Image 1 (cartoon, rainbow, N blue to C red):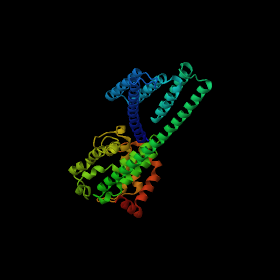
Image 2 (cartoon, one colour):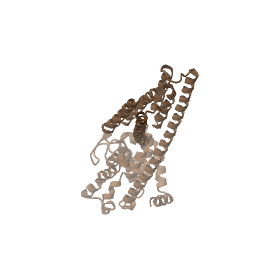
Image 3 (tube, helix red, strand yellow):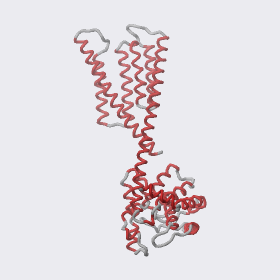
Image 4 (cartoon, one colour):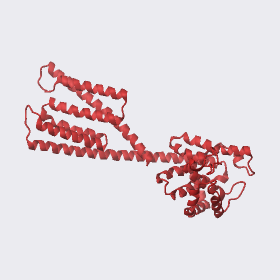
Length: 398
């Protein structure tokens, strides 16, 4: 949800900036043509326009000044948007007076249309109301050189204005639908790409050690099952935790195979090499923008509640929650899985070991929550040890 909102804001920001730029250009071309048009009439002594040339030149100069200020000062796009629409409102009033007063009331119909192009509800409502008030007031209060509108004319003008404002609102809705589809398409594309990257990483790591095949997938599922039972864990963060579980051991790609697959007890030096996989993994995921949020889980999943873990000996709640959850899930799968140097223990024995680590290795609250996920853990364990499903998962990876 957070990613979708951020991406939507980026689309809206870019659209707002482009619309403001285009409107400045369109207004500039219109005023330049108007000035040229009226200059020709003036030089040829042709009375085909009521416009005041000096006023049009002033409007063009003010437009150029505003465009230059926005280009070099680079204000937020919302400020630029209001500058453009406020200027356009003033320009419509000027054109109303310079083009025959009541005969030019229809110029105001452009305001809700242009405000609607931005695709935002508040500016559309605000500037549509502003234009309606200006048009109504000027229609009643300002003199005219050729025609005096009666109440029916003015009410019809207001009706036409409201109709166009409604169409502008429909334009707004259409733009929102387009934005939403674009955002959803982009997110789906990114998620597909990320899944492919994650699967590639998993294959690279687990191909080095046949005994670890499926470990990342199981840890991810155990972690999500445990987090789902936590009342304070945000549901929107489950995807991040799932990916963290899949990539928690990605740093082992840097560990020599002779250490990963060693059947005897590791030496102190070899264990120090193993411990580097958390830091290496964290550095790998932080290099990919869409995976940077996974860094804390990957880096700290071997920390202990009592501060005796690695790599930074954090303790208690100083350890990120994702990492504490992954520590429980990782330990459970490690104990119930066979390794090159030992056979896996039973599920009940693994639960017993986790409870023994309550308050020392593991977060006490998470261990207390195991009673609610034992059935889920057993189901995941059973599914992962199904030969047919294991083969299907293997073929999915490759």
